[in-house]
Amino acid sequence: MNSELEPQFMLIDHEADAYLATIKIARESLDIFKENLGKISEGDFACVKFYIPVSLDAEEGANIWLMTPFFEDHFCFARPFELPEEFTWIQIGQWLKFSEADLLDWYILKQNGEMIGGYSLRYQRSKLSAEQQAEFDQRVGVTRFIDL
Image (cartoon, rainbow, N blue to C red; front, side, top):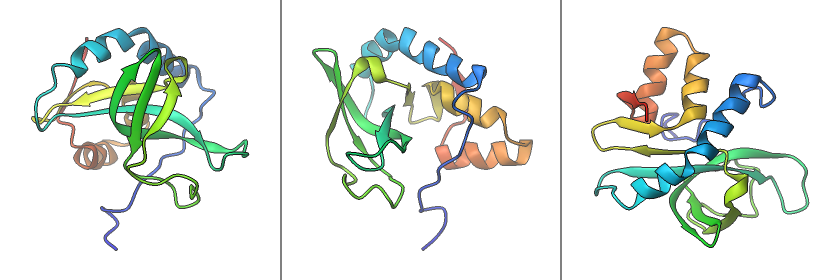
């Protein structure tokens, strides 16, 4: 299988102050994300990030990006589009339900490559060399990060 088509997951320090700040910003700007969800055009891509355990009874897990989010009664519903192989209790495309309070990040990637949100992605990218940043941007499809 082509490695560009395989899921890629990046380990980061989830206790780092800079990473924790990305969660705070994402949660504080959630209303902006919800407002913009209703305005996305065909070809735009919206995602949210939540922690998902590796199995229902596991303490270990991963922060996973999910697609097609919508919000109802303080819950977010979304579907995974890639998963680590050990996550066998859920399937790609399966609808999952999370409390809004557990949101870790969000983004809208416009068809032209402009991204709003994606605060943890920005943090991850900042840890890479210039060459790796270019590869990261190409893989994600981002041409420019837009500040709110």
